[in-house]
Amino acid sequence: MANCWQCGNCSAICPVAHEHPEFNPRYLIHIVRMGYTSEIERLKDSVYLCSGCGLCSSVCPRRVDPQHVMIALSLAFHMKGGR
Image (tube, rainbow, N blue to C red):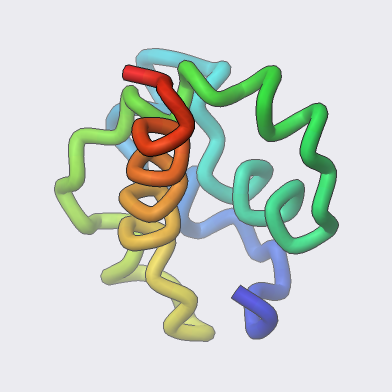
């Protein structure tokens, strides 16, 4: 994630982000990188919207792999008693 330069390619190609504006891979990666735990907690339900299609990862010029960031976030929330 440290390689992410916030280009927005992941959010632009994401079919879920087009249907659900609250799901924004670029922003989710940013708040995780910055350690904004209260904002991460506030948006945790949106993480579960990720379909796992991998389009975001296929267009990332920095090979950040946003798909796996979303998977890791959803697993972390699940382990903390989320969905």
